[in-house]
Length: 220
Image (cartoon, rainbow, N blue to C red):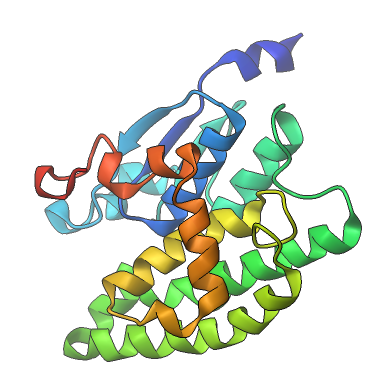
């Protein structure tokens, strides 16, 4: 009974409109049809609101997102996605088939561990004036590995014909690539998948241009 009552409470997402990791969680919530509240954590204002002692109690790494759900706080996007997939109804975000599930996790980890962290705000602030070529180098390096993998695994989506956690990870990374002026046309499978996913309502609703903390000049 207690778990049922706890699950009725809305999750709270502490995030930032343009954070890839926050965006992944928003997509997952949207795909699952989960209502949730958002608390904005501005990564730039006041020197970075994620660096406050108050926020550190939610996420000791002082990064976004932090998600309060079912009386626990989770602070890694893939952990959040897998938790809600295991505890909430709706379309599966990880396939039932072990091989397909392993492929989804492989692609998700390649993006979430091998590409995206190297364009994190905290990393780019340390790089300084060289941040554009730095970001382009590591995005291209990652996409050069990701493209042949997706050629093997993709159907309509990243792994077969069902949306999965891999797709949730892909679309924010392509957005970052375009922000840093990477020619995504070099990667036809990535480009095709991104264009397909961008037309799905859950991905549209989760887009950085449509969030409560999106600056007025960036709103859709």
